[in-house]
Image (tube, rainbow, N blue to C red):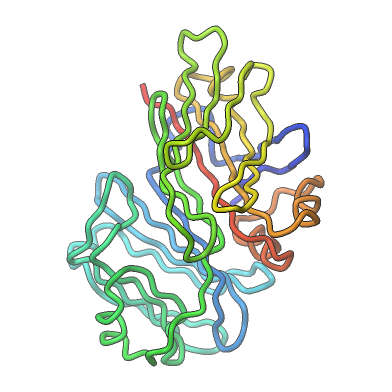
Length: 295
C-alpha cells in the first residue's frame, strides 16, 4: 500500500499515492491504526483498520513481522457485525492467535472507529498482545488471558476525513498521551488567495498564506511540549478537481538528529514498513490524514 509521502525535504513534500486519486470514488470512510507488539518474544506490527459503508461497520486485522512480511490477516465483514461479538483464530510464529471482539454496546461517532462500550483483543499463548476499548475486565474474562497489561505501543494512524472548508479529527501524538481536537481549515472555492490553518484544541498553531505558491511544504509546531512536523500537499484542492483530496502528515520527533533522518529523500515504503523503520530509529508517532472535499 504505497500511500505515504515519498520524499520529505526542508522545502516541501512530494506525495506518491496510487490509492488516492483526485476523484471522490476512492474516498473511503476508514481509520487504520498501527501498534508495535510482541508475539512469542518477537517484535511485530498489528494494523487494525475500521471501515464504514452502506453495509455497516467492518474491521480488518493484519500482522506483519519485522521484515515487513505479512504473517496473517483477517477481515471481519460488516454483515458479521449483526452479532456484534465473536472471535476468530489465526496462526503466526508457529502459535495460535485468537482475535476477540464485542461491539454489542459500542457507541460510534461520525467515523467508523468505536468510541466506547467495546473491546477488541488479540491473544497469543494466553497473553494479551493487544487490547482496545474500555471494557477491559470483560475482555480478560472472555479471552482467559493472563491479567498482565499489554505492552503494545500505538505508533501510527491513517484516517480519511471529509468536509467542505473545515476538517476535524482527534489526535493523540504519543502512546497514552492526551487526545486533542485537531481542525484543518482551508477555503479554496472562489477565493483569490487561499489560506491554510491548523488548530489544536482551538488554538491556531500554523497558518500558510499564498497557498497557490506553497501548496506543498512542511512546518514545525509544538504540542504537549513535543515538536510535531507537519507536512502538507494540497495540490489537488487547488489545481485538481473540486472533489480532490489533500494529504497531511503529522510526525513527532524525539531528538534533532531524528528530524534530520526523516528530512532526507527516502523511498515510498509500505504502510507497515514505514513504522517498523520509524520505531527502529526511535521516532515516536505519525498521523496521516486524507482530507476529501465534499460537494
